[in-house]
Image (cartoon, rainbow, N blue to C red; front, side):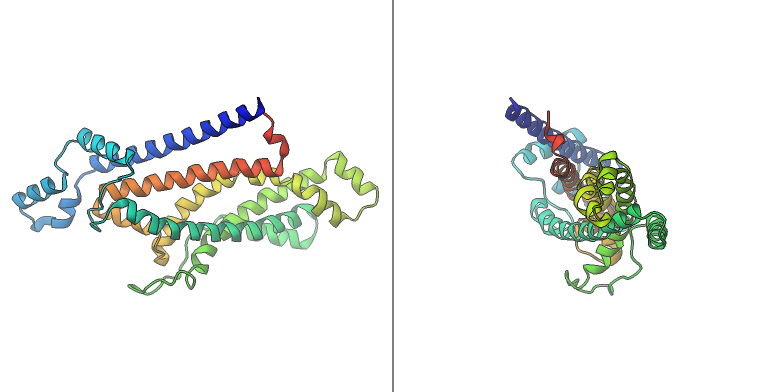
Length: 300
């Protein structure tokens, strides 16, 4: 019975993920179609004649109605054909993975920075509220939380981006504000756990405070932090798109900007749908993290 409930839960989550991806992709196609102008008008500008524009729209299929375009896109998407980029003249399904890998690398680096800094600093700040260092940590967190996820350092225009060389700057720009958020959550959580009767009883038996904190209270305090990792993925997506543009990071953010500027409708849809995939995956990982730190979550 329990296995059946787990399977039902997994199927429900996968169905929700598919619905999310379809909804976001469909909405982006409709909104791009309804917005004024199109790829042809942006390419030809005021110099293009109406005859030339009409021929170009017919050749690219942009003269079709919204219903027809959506039906054709949906039919092709079922066969994993997401259209052809008008700007790059390449299949969208070939362009997206190239950039998605770079965005995933940046997101993983930012989450690593946020986790390695946020959790230990949160434990220090929450377990010793009256000391000087926790006050310094809290002040630094407030400053970082008020900062937008961006960097003032930009590679030279037209420079080839070395992924490893330029990874530190955007990862820090995104990861440090996230570390501040995790630190605040972790500090509050560890403070509440240390006030629990079973922890106070353990301290009363004479065990070293540091041992009680790191071996007993630490895991119990991770549940509130683990529950927000799905939201962190959404923050990573919105924040990394800005940082990618500023730092010339070749990820989905810069690709999405190019698609929006030129009204490359199928590329816009592909980028938006990929973002929805990341969001759904992040939500699922958040649920798995909750199960890992709190076995009671497994109970139906």
